Image (tube, rainbow, N blue to C red; front, side, top):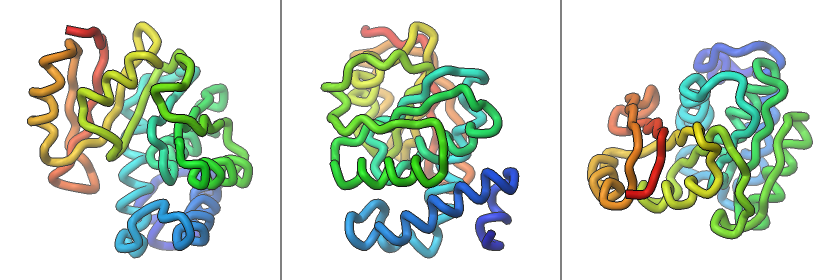
Length: 205
């Protein structure tokens, strides 16, 4: 366990071991398929792992299904799935990622960490409705588009958790032309210009 990782995440030894396996696989695969920007590797734990982990506690407890759209390198979906492996073992996570190379990477992490998750290697629009209690996304699309994707996959009482940058207010204004929803915002713990959006009661305007 590296000092850098253990200093930033307060988790059990078993959970940290899974995260370390994930980090090692990402570092190994990244030069070939560009899972994260090379410039962020020196800050891998803060920029990607801690950034993803912070949304875990914002989700409802004891849920059945978490869908991560445009999962890419697995952030935030695989991080939250690893955190749930001990705390909420009945939860399943579906990572939707249309890039076949990235989907193969995600399946490798799932296998090597032994977590309860699967990968849909298709575009989110073509995936059959998943009935997810939580839909998450990070750096995928403008908010209005995200809500369109998420609306097909959410349960009636499901929530969206989206990590957004400093321009989220503009995206919010545009989304309100098409959608109605309840919104809570939370400042990012890893980026002072970023915000986490928690959205519920989603309906078309």
